[in-house]
Image (cartoon, rainbow, N blue to C red):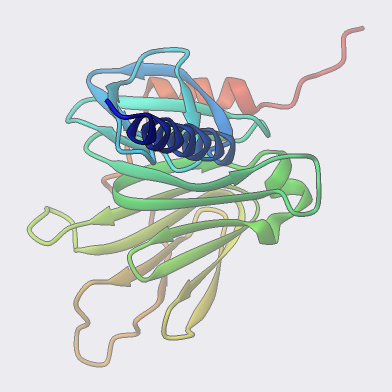
Length: 230
């Protein structure tokens, strides 16, 4: 190996190491897996895939995918909570938490269902917390929501559903249409419109496909206000 080639090779390795260091510092740790059941995976922003286990770290840019009859419960560093339902794919598109006005959470629901309970960022900088599902964007106001994408061919009507357990949200479409959805109501945008039907609707009924389970009891335990000891 010539001295020139050796120097070039070292230079390439140095550049690669710097890029990896830069990437790892950018992908800020977002939180940890509190509980998991069934089979699920985490795909990092670097496209590395691994099986989910209790205690695993999740970072900005990670995508969590669950199989049928599996769920993943995640506690983020700002004390917000995410329950990823069966047959779902959720991406933590951006997470930044430094106790600053620029703290941000952006989450993409790519398929399936996500229950999300606001934490410190949602309470202090609610405008910096956004959830996206297809063409819908949901902004929160100190909220506990359940966001679902129902595909064509399913038992329930296809579209994006946004049920509000507590608080309120603004549901907006890329067409500029907006609506406020409050507690016990459901925002809905259908995949296919019927004649004369609004593109963005508020339903009075809770979607039948939303079924509570053991993970919901854990969410209630994690998010319940703690009473002072006497």
